[in-house]
View (cartoon, rainbow, N blue to C red):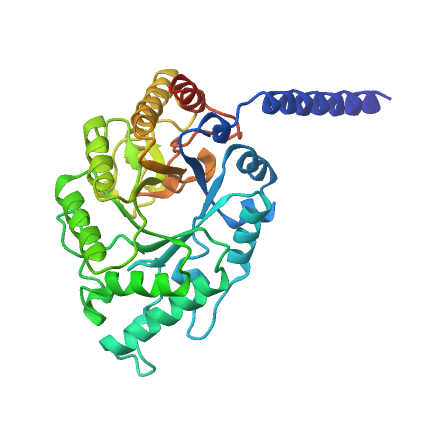
Length: 377
């Protein structure tokens, strides 16, 4: 009898918690509504989200966002893992999810020097391909991927991270095989593959003068050659003190002057100490680094939570001031637990860069974004 009563009490508590959470969720405003008069608000999603395996995250995405970008499933490594073999199932689910929810769908990414298998640059004898053969392979990949989703994916990150921080092109396999005009050829093929899709260049650190100026030259060159480029996305992998408001505005103004759309494509705010010098390490086996590099294992202190909220408010205030130029802002992940920053630049840290916490609940940073948006109307 006591067991039965205890079981019933536990069940009642679970039901009440669920009811309270549902009530709370029902009263959480939607970012897409708060920002409806400004720009699209997007999010990067994984296959668990679009398949419904992570149902709580799926519900957040459906309510909060009106644009989606795939974290990985459209990168060459995953969608084209072997010669003459494409793995479209995860990408199909991603596109279908966006269509079902009437979202602006972004394809990410067609041409990048990372997350691409080595065979892509080599022939059957493992020799590096020449220019013509590599261009044929590039065209085949772009036409096959874009062709499958023609008229369904609204915009594509055609080329990702081609520039180094000093400005010139990375010495990548694309440059080695095709030459420095590989960016031009990628945009040419992408427009041929789907003339109605928007085409973007995407990169990080475009707030830094040398790289920003190099990207401006790149966009001008594409336009001078009569090629289509609709927008430039800056990967907003930022921190509490970087970049400055002035740097963000200079990026926006530089590309607005070129007549292209401006997007923040991968926004998250790192609150943890810099750890780039330990890149690749596993913090779990480096005990002496735990306290210094992973200080918030048991939760984010209130004072840091406030700093994060203030930082998000500052960034969105800048973006809202330029809403005539900024067309989309995309968060790189839905909630803290699944953020890539838990494992970059070192593995095993507890990171807090997004608007929803590890329990799927909106953070003070979420409230700050909503309040900033409402105050800008």
